[in-house]
Image (cartoon, rainbow, N blue to C red; front, side, top):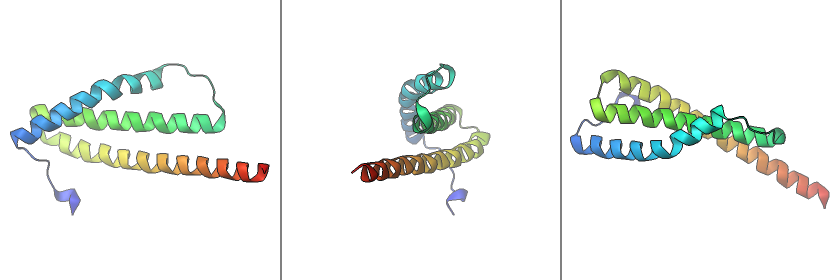
Length: 116
C-alpha cells in the first residue's frame, strides 16, 4: 500500500525537503567520499565489518538525499522510482548495520563471560 503513495508536490514540502537534504548532504557527502576513497588501515575483522557497514550506510543515505534534493528542485517523475529503490537499499543497509552491531555486542559479551 505504501508503494502507491506519491511524494508530495506542495511547494512548502519541497522547500523543506530540499533544505533538509542540502543540509545533510553537506555533512554526509564528504564523509562518504572520504570513507570510500581514502586508504584506511586494517582494523581487524570486526573493525572492518563496522567500517564496511558505515560506508554502506553513508553511501545509501547520500544517494537518497541527493535524489530528494533533485526531486525538490525539479520534481521529475523518474526520481520517484529511483528514490523508492534507493530507500529500499537504505532500509537493508540499516538492517544489516543493526545486525552487525548486535553480533559484535554478542561476541564482546561472550568474550567477557569466558574471561571471568
